[in-house]
Length: 164
Image 1 (cartoon, rainbow, N blue to C red):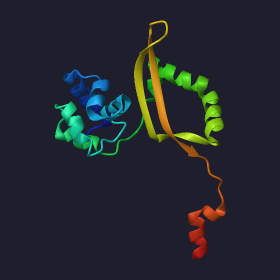
Image 2: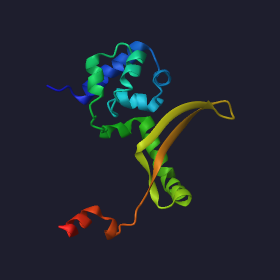
Image 3: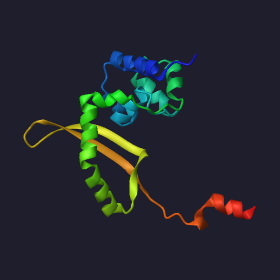
Image 4: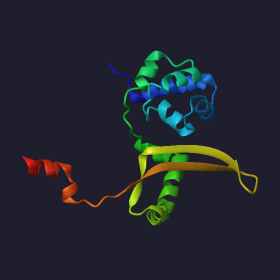
């Protein structure tokens, strides 16, 4: 019987806790971003074969069984109750509040299109503000994807149908 995503994630988080390492430290040791490390350990991203040895070196308690599980395509999902967690709620609130303006600037700078969440890098950093207080810096680094004009002559499936 296949182990549930939450069970695997729980085991992976236990390995992280046992290591005593932060996401940032694991990221440095693997060459990944801190958020991607968290995504891997929560089974929200797929571990690639060439990264597995680096992750296992950073987290020696990772078993081959867990590594194999991490290399399977994950079910990328979220718990709908997660929005009740204050940090997640505030992130959602910030995106909703600033989203329209961000969209306008993307369109102004790039044209009619979107930011990919697949070809995407994300990191969380800590900096000191001008007032000396800690500040959170979230970086969303996504590939720009322009919307395309849908011309029939470019629609491969339609061209194939016409050729039959």
